[in-house]
Length: 456
Image (cartoon, rainbow, N blue to C red):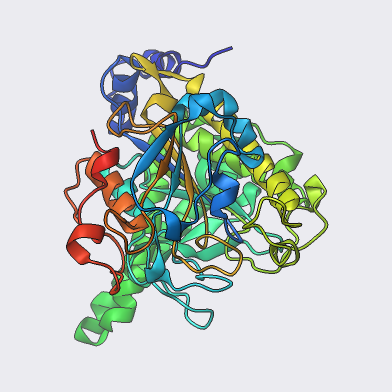
């Protein structure tokens, strides 16, 4: 049965009587009435490379990046998707496979240590973000209740991943790796029972901490310094978030995912299934218009996919090769990627089944799949294959196509930074570059402005 946001919000308005709805409720109700809704973005980041040949349908002649001399496109309707992308077959008209964009600005090797969404260079010794990341910047441009949500899966017992997303230089945003804790962070305000009680206890504690820090700041005067101001800013931000959640309790209650054993599972793949549902619920409930979902991102030598029968580490099958169709590592990559694209397809279907305005939520959503490091297992960064689902109601020339950009340094070559600039321009932000500049490429021709071939 299809869930309509209009029905959800009509119930809310009837119950509210003459009380004014929170601004977010008005925005979401406007969507349900057929008015323009904010564009949405989902970034799905997976570890250990995405070889260009694995993104190419077998019926399309594959060219290595150094052999690509011109921009060209192929209609996907005439071709069967690669095995690892097979779950998107039913969404092929909305799918774009994008080849040839480079990311040399991030470095290379086994890992780029979380620089994929910010396009800067970090190292294992210093993973601090160098600038705002594209996911958070897009979230700021058209914010929901929160500008951004981040969830993911790791093979260990960590609670958060801190080197993928950032709101500013050296200000990381946590990718929550525990689905139960992610649920508590975003939906406990409407959960009832002990979870909701704990939400209010946390809110009260944050109010106390903000007041305490402010009193200390006032008492110390000019001696307080930047460190105390940073603490105050962090507590203020958390407290403000809690109040925004409280204001939108009824909307979140309707959209919240159903808690089941996947939220507490010890199996990593089960946990990621729960995280995808939670991210979809966040979009549907208006919690945020941007979500980042990580799948063992930045993990080089881990076994996160035991739950689907992959008993080798990422590193092990990475060294079996993936840049040839008959490489021994390809079946492992295909099995893992097919499972993950199955989750992406399920999320897309849920958004497609949720009416909004004169269409559905998927119409105004872009889902971007990419590796946390470009191309192959030992990344060269000369190309960074991506798969994109959606086109923001036709604001971008995406869907039903396989796209090749010219190889690195050749006339017409572009970077992933140019793609991120394209996303920003599509939401009305006139920005001409994004991320660290590649000194070996022409700045104006290859790194400035959006991708004109993908803009309407």
